[in-house]
Image 1: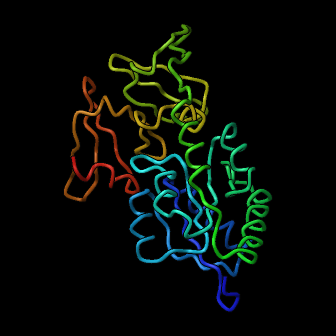
Image 2: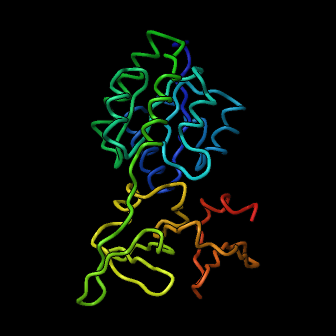
Length: 254
């Protein structure tokens, strides 16, 4: 690394709130870092990377469409990578091997500071990052073999109900609970939307709003109004689900 210039970074995180929090923490903990840009999807990240490769890439793993692992493969060994992840089992063991670093969600300042210190040392010692091929293969195998949530214990009034994830049309945050909406009814589960998301198969359950995760198999179509707002039409459900702007890209081809 050329010490005459400021280190550069690209921030990739699909949740705008988490992206803002990470940006603010980086500004506090690494003020000399120049942020080249931000991306909310893997595709956006690749487009930015085609323009300029940063020194370090802060990269979410679980994103709809192109995942963080796919983006890392695109980067190859052209920059250092810090994964931002909710996975703390197989992933942590792989990251600790030292090829790249990681920060667990929700991001803690102390842990991010440790990751920054490691990146600074790598930038000073080695201009060419370690190869990611082996690590990415390990992570991909871990994701492929991961067991996702198949059923949920929920409550309807005073009654308990077991709902399979195949029955779910969408999940919606509701204060301390999460609404589980099926094709023929709804129930509540004592779990936050974020906790649920970490246990759901991301290829089937897509976050489309800060408070909503939809089962892709329940989507019948997409509607847009004159203001550019996007809504999902559901199979066997009358309501429309609002799609917040950071997730509009997911439905441009629909």
